[in-house]
Image (cartoon, rainbow, N blue to C red):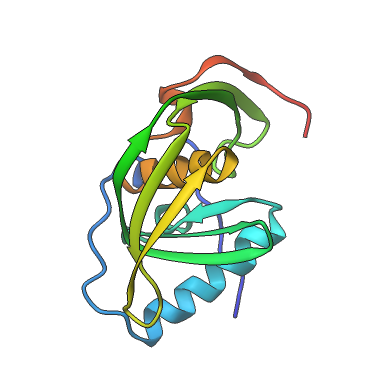
Length: 152
Protein backbone atom coordinates (compact mmCIF):
# COMPACT_ATOMS: atom_id res chain seq x y z
CA UNK A 1 0.00 0.00 0.00
CA UNK A 2 1.07 3.55 -0.57
CA UNK A 3 -0.13 7.07 -0.28
CA UNK A 4 -0.94 8.91 -3.46
CA UNK A 5 -0.77 12.61 -4.22
CA UNK A 6 -4.09 14.39 -3.88
CA UNK A 7 -4.82 16.57 -6.89
CA UNK A 8 -5.87 20.10 -6.03
CA UNK A 9 -8.22 22.69 -7.51
CA UNK A 10 -6.91 23.86 -10.86
CA UNK A 11 -5.82 20.37 -11.93
CA UNK A 12 -7.88 19.66 -15.04
CA UNK A 13 -8.47 16.00 -14.11
CA UNK A 14 -10.83 17.14 -11.36
CA UNK A 15 -13.17 18.56 -14.01
CA UNK A 16 -13.38 15.43 -16.16
CA UNK A 17 -16.06 12.75 -16.08
CA UNK A 18 -14.78 9.40 -14.83
CA UNK A 19 -15.18 6.18 -16.78
CA UNK A 20 -16.90 3.10 -15.35
CA UNK A 21 -14.75 0.39 -13.80
CA UNK A 22 -15.18 -2.48 -16.25
CA UNK A 23 -13.12 -5.07 -14.39
CA UNK A 24 -12.34 -5.39 -10.70
CA UNK A 25 -8.81 -6.77 -10.64
CA UNK A 26 -5.66 -6.44 -8.52
CA UNK A 27 -4.98 -3.01 -9.99
CA UNK A 28 -8.35 -1.73 -8.72
CA UNK A 29 -7.84 -3.42 -5.34
CA UNK A 30 -4.43 -1.76 -4.93
CA UNK A 31 -5.94 1.58 -5.96
CA UNK A 32 -8.65 1.16 -3.29
CA UNK A 33 -6.06 0.34 -0.60
CA UNK A 34 -3.94 3.33 -1.62
CA UNK A 35 -6.98 5.62 -1.61
CA UNK A 36 -7.96 4.50 1.90
CA UNK A 37 -4.44 5.13 3.17
CA UNK A 38 -4.32 8.53 1.43
CA UNK A 39 -7.74 9.53 2.81
CA UNK A 40 -6.78 8.55 6.36
CA UNK A 41 -3.43 10.34 6.18
CA UNK A 42 -5.25 13.52 5.09
CA UNK A 43 -7.94 13.09 7.79
CA UNK A 44 -10.72 12.92 5.19
CA UNK A 45 -14.09 11.21 5.29
CA UNK A 46 -14.03 10.26 1.61
CA UNK A 47 -11.81 10.29 -1.45
CA UNK A 48 -12.70 9.80 -5.11
CA UNK A 49 -10.39 8.25 -7.70
CA UNK A 50 -10.05 11.48 -9.75
CA UNK A 51 -8.63 13.15 -6.64
CA UNK A 52 -5.60 10.87 -6.99
CA UNK A 53 -5.44 11.27 -10.77
CA UNK A 54 -7.42 8.20 -11.84
CA UNK A 55 -10.53 8.73 -13.99
CA UNK A 56 -12.45 5.70 -12.72
CA UNK A 57 -15.92 5.70 -11.15
CA UNK A 58 -15.00 4.74 -7.63
CA UNK A 59 -14.59 6.32 -4.24
CA UNK A 60 -13.76 5.29 -0.70
CA UNK A 61 -15.30 6.58 2.50
CA UNK A 62 -14.87 5.93 6.21
CA UNK A 63 -17.95 6.68 8.27
CA UNK A 64 -19.26 5.30 11.55
CA UNK A 65 -16.19 3.08 11.86
CA UNK A 66 -16.90 1.41 8.53
CA UNK A 67 -14.70 1.62 5.42
CA UNK A 68 -16.64 1.53 2.15
CA UNK A 69 -15.26 1.01 -1.34
CA UNK A 70 -17.88 2.17 -3.82
CA UNK A 71 -17.35 1.06 -7.42
CA UNK A 72 -19.60 2.40 -10.19
CA UNK A 73 -21.92 4.11 -7.67
CA UNK A 74 -25.32 5.50 -8.63
CA UNK A 75 -27.97 7.23 -6.57
CA UNK A 76 -31.26 5.43 -7.11
CA UNK A 77 -33.35 7.49 -4.69
CA UNK A 78 -33.06 10.76 -2.84
CA UNK A 79 -35.34 12.57 -0.42
CA UNK A 80 -35.49 15.86 1.39
CA UNK A 81 -32.85 18.53 1.76
CA UNK A 82 -30.09 19.37 4.17
CA UNK A 83 -27.79 22.33 4.20
CA UNK A 84 -24.34 22.05 5.73
CA UNK A 85 -20.71 23.08 5.64
CA UNK A 86 -18.33 21.13 3.43
CA UNK A 87 -14.65 21.10 2.71
CA UNK A 88 -12.60 19.01 0.34
CA UNK A 89 -9.15 17.44 0.36
CA UNK A 90 -8.67 18.87 -3.14
CA UNK A 91 -9.45 22.42 -1.98
CA UNK A 92 -7.51 22.77 1.27
CA UNK A 93 -8.23 25.69 3.55
CA UNK A 94 -11.66 26.48 2.11
CA UNK A 95 -15.22 25.55 2.99
CA UNK A 96 -18.74 26.46 1.99
CA UNK A 97 -22.40 25.74 2.65
CA UNK A 98 -23.91 23.19 0.26
CA UNK A 99 -27.50 22.03 -0.19
CA UNK A 100 -27.66 18.23 -0.51
CA UNK A 101 -30.36 15.55 -0.24
CA UNK A 102 -31.16 14.61 3.37
CA UNK A 103 -31.39 10.92 2.45
CA UNK A 104 -30.07 8.87 -0.45
CA UNK A 105 -30.09 5.28 -1.58
CA UNK A 106 -26.94 4.41 -3.51
CA UNK A 107 -26.06 1.25 -5.36
CA UNK A 108 -22.41 0.33 -5.87
CA UNK A 109 -20.19 -2.70 -6.33
CA UNK A 110 -17.62 -3.80 -3.77
CA UNK A 111 -14.12 -5.17 -4.39
CA UNK A 112 -15.55 -8.65 -5.03
CA UNK A 113 -17.84 -7.29 -7.73
CA UNK A 114 -21.00 -7.79 -5.67
CA UNK A 115 -23.61 -5.07 -6.02
CA UNK A 116 -25.00 -3.57 -2.80
CA UNK A 117 -27.61 -1.00 -1.85
CA UNK A 118 -26.67 1.58 0.78
CA UNK A 119 -29.14 3.81 2.59
CA UNK A 120 -27.63 6.98 3.98
CA UNK A 121 -28.84 10.10 5.71
CA UNK A 122 -27.25 13.17 7.25
CA UNK A 123 -23.46 13.28 7.03
CA UNK A 124 -23.22 9.93 5.26
CA UNK A 125 -25.61 11.10 2.53
CA UNK A 126 -23.59 14.32 2.22
CA UNK A 127 -20.33 12.40 1.79
CA UNK A 128 -21.85 10.03 -0.78
CA UNK A 129 -23.15 12.96 -2.85
CA UNK A 130 -19.90 14.94 -2.53
CA UNK A 131 -17.81 11.98 -3.74
CA UNK A 132 -20.23 11.12 -6.54
CA UNK A 133 -19.94 14.73 -7.75
CA UNK A 134 -16.17 14.22 -8.06
CA UNK A 135 -16.83 11.36 -10.50
CA UNK A 136 -18.78 13.80 -12.67
CA UNK A 137 -16.16 16.57 -12.63
CA UNK A 138 -18.08 18.68 -10.11
CA UNK A 139 -16.45 20.31 -7.10
CA UNK A 140 -18.46 21.29 -4.03
CA UNK A 141 -17.48 24.93 -4.53
CA UNK A 142 -19.61 24.91 -7.71
CA UNK A 143 -22.68 24.48 -5.49
CA UNK A 144 -21.54 26.32 -2.37
CA UNK A 145 -22.67 29.55 -0.81
CA UNK A 146 -20.66 31.30 1.90
CA UNK A 147 -17.53 29.88 0.24
CA UNK A 148 -14.62 31.14 2.34
CA UNK A 149 -11.25 30.41 3.87
CA UNK A 150 -11.42 28.28 6.99
CA UNK A 151 -9.05 27.39 9.76
CA UNK A 152 -7.47 23.98 9.26
